[in-house]
Amino acid sequence: MPPILFGVHIPFVKLQGAGNGYIAIDGRPLAGLDLAELARHACDPHFGIGSDGLVVARDPDETSAATSPATSPAIGLVIHNSDGSEAEMSGNGVRLFAKFVLDSGLTSAGPEGLVIETRAGLRRVVPELDAAGRMQAGRVGMEEPRILERALSLEAGGRSLSLTTLSLGNPHAVLLTDEPVEDFPLDRIGPAVEHHAHFPDRTNFEVVNVLSSERLRVRVHERGEGETLSSGTGSTASAVAARAAGRTGDCVTVALRGGELIVRWPGHGPAELDGPTTEVFRGVLDFEPRGGAR
Image (tube, rainbow, N blue to C red; front, top):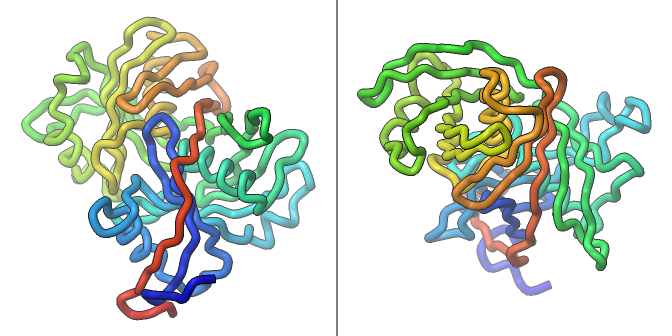
């Protein structure tokens, strides 16, 4: 191993799914490291690697590991946004994390997929493997959507909005609109919605065009991130809001700035998110914590 140049020597993998980028690391040898500080540094495109977030492998909690073999998590996951805040759940983050741990040999999938323990509960990823046995796509079972408000009237950024608010383990506010999403001033309205007093824990915000009963066009402002090229939970929230409004069927393709994802939701029960998983590159990050590793 080369010498440690700046404090902590951390192997990483950069991955993306439909343009949603994550840095993945094995956090188990890094006990006591400030992951929020690491996320801010690593996700910075100028001084770090550049990414929408950081996904970190951890040991699952003992209580979860004691469940039945079919539902016992193989590994735990912590997700941090690029601003250092911790995210309860990320659909793309979970799928990309699954690729990281499977391709790196940190764990293996069972006959029914890989069970991952997140802060929002257990998630099962069913991987699709290429000829070399590496994960090239994956389907993740999301939390059952919980619709909170179907027509919330909100003033934000100088706009009057009618929003569908819901939870997928993390909060979302969805705007179904006929205004082309490409023309929507998301850079101004997104932060205003995220930090609105109605959402004391902040919220993710999606702007959605229903193109047909099987296709949506979506832009996403992620809490703690700003606009991202795609979002798994954002795509799922958009599909749920459109389906609940009676404007789509059970399966839709969500077209985002970074690519396409597929969401299945029959109007009840958990949703499913399907899409590509791609490794961008591997490397080693030399990280010097401001206060040193604790």
